[in-house]
Length: 325
Picture 1: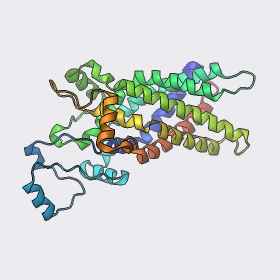
Picture 2: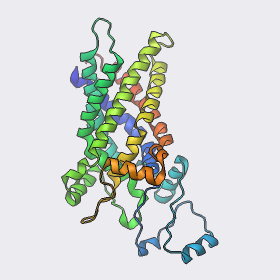
Picture 3: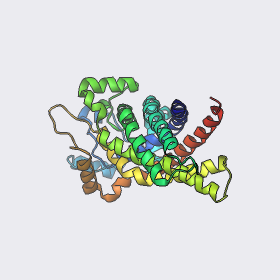
């Protein structure tokens, strides 16, 4: 029974992760907006033209007369971010880092889904066949934390591969695959770099799993108890979308900080941009305001909603297919 839960959760997670990968990439790019990006060197800057930029002689002349003024790039929405990615690097760039997504879902989501299933079976009252919400949340916190610790290397690789396109061409890491990313990080930054931001990953995963899995089960039970719908596709879609919204609201601030800490470039002999999660949070709020912690919320909910729907609808179908095994 335990192994079956891991297999079912793993299949559903990989399907959901791959199908919503472009939305996740857009979310990462938006979360990095406003953060000081590394400046290209003089030679490279002559060959780089910002996407969707319009020539303006007045602006150009002003920039030439004040070369030391670095104006922050305008913040744009998810559609503009997607168009910019396609214009700069082609449509295939929307799937940058998908190999890391597959590995991440295989390690992280398979672990958390399987452990949650085990705890759910152990903690469900055999007489009523129900599990109190507090126990669901507890199971989610435990399963999410362990899953995140297992999957952190793939998570770091995925964030870096997704964020690479925003760097100047001469400073891109140009990882060929998730294996290449992990190999290069280990060689240049040490094995510990694979667990950079792990405390954030664990905290976020605990919140995601508790809010996502627990709320899905809770919403599903409420819908069926009140006879609003029967156990079928309509119930699964409704409960999973509600769970996705709850998870997005709860986890977005942690996700923003996690993305920035994982993506920071640490130069040998130089102080890192952020000393840790708290330092990153304080610098982000100070420089960009408190609402910066909800940067990328639209693509987060736009991704979390479909991801959660695909995850649980696929999970329910996989369970039906494997019910006799």
